[in-house]
Image (cartoon, rainbow, N blue to C red; front, side, top):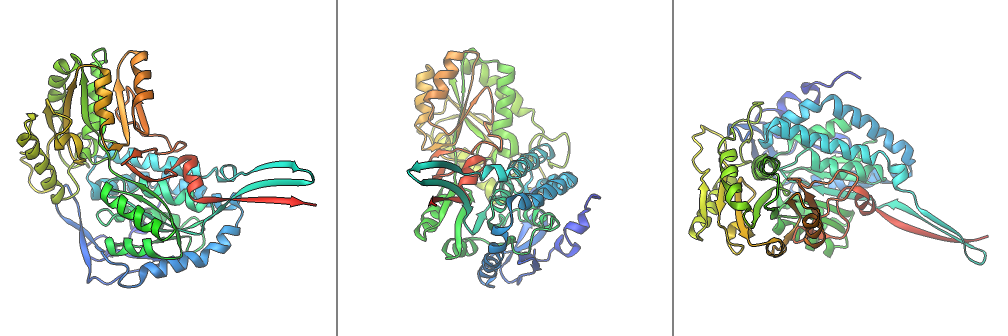
Length: 496
């Protein structure tokens, strides 16, 4: 199969100021421009295209759900071995268009090409995992469970399910969702982020080339109005969401109130503990990638360093030196280490947190507020030292390139600081001590744990297992949890 070029994926009129289309029942529909808002290139501030903000107003959400509901019975009855053939073809198309997808992520999100390529690769890994659905959906059997009785269980799809995606991983997060759901026999309504919607369209246009029936995958755009209609629609059986903690809580409460299954991945405040015996070269490099990769706009970003004992005295100057040398600019330039934030509002929010840190008495050892950049939504890395756990910059998710350093006497105090967070997404320790690592991994209250790893992101075969205020729901995204979320058990008891 020859490589699909840009023009065949996205029509020229969709690349400029016109409104992006929606996919409903196999047909691309262009909504009214009345509620459309611009999609920016965050490196330049230029408008890439426009996206409709209220799909509910044009009845597009209901039409998309009805299209998915119409496609569901035949897709459910399609053997799993046949359903995954579409994923095999999808995987090939993703590989052929790998660079196009990565470049699009950089253009509309701002992250570096290296980061974008890593995102696309992680998304493809979920397609690999979902392609094993014939095995993943296997049930269990017990013969002669009672005299003359046999019993077995099977996993069956739910029906129409929907995914509400964030701006910071516009390729990976949709690929966390719809490949698993569709391979399991569901039909899907995807709502990409209104800030980074083109990547979702590219994925849908590639998937449409796999031979999957019309209506199996649908795409709608919008903001809160679109989300609310998905949450309230009686034909939507489950909602997957990734975003901020307040919105995740809102999605969970409102979707669950209508009887839906919900997995709502929320905010984070991830701690990186550094012991005095840590390999500092490895540690500093890991912290740079964790804290400032994607400009800190990741739910696994390490935003708090907890320096244990004497570790801080040597560590903080090294962090300052490494962060001060990071080259800031357009992510399309190969030698750039950190791109822009996604919007000007994000820049203002991060600046306000830097001001809060100063007002609360933390020591600003690296001030990233003055960028000198012309155009775009840039900030440089900022580092605070001698931060107290009760400060805003230590407690609240900033979602930007700000690193807070807290100093503690020992590992027990460091664990207490980490576990005092209302979030529980991820935490890592840097040490040469097996005893310290074991104490940490068994005592830390987070769902994802790293040992000498800056970003403790699980592979697709494991669940993205946030705890506490970082997750609302029961079954997590990806891995076997993802399969269970998009299916339910049927138990058969039979006598002959």
